[in-house]
Image (cartoon, rainbow, N blue to C red; front, side, top):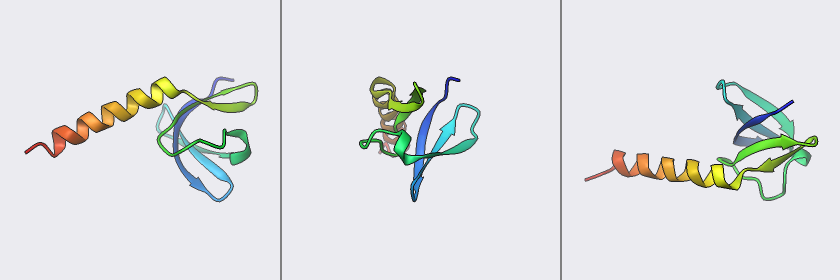
Length: 73
């Protein structure tokens, strides 16, 4: 099963991941790298989640651009 999503938040020992369809699912924190943060793009491989660093950078850049447009003077 391919699971891809964006880390929304942490709730105790759970990581809440937003999936492509907008729904959220909770997964045990132990399935993620220690460096995972909200906003990271993640995917599951071999039963564990990994961070898609390129996708995370792309999403951050898109959000930064939107924020710049929103607050442009």
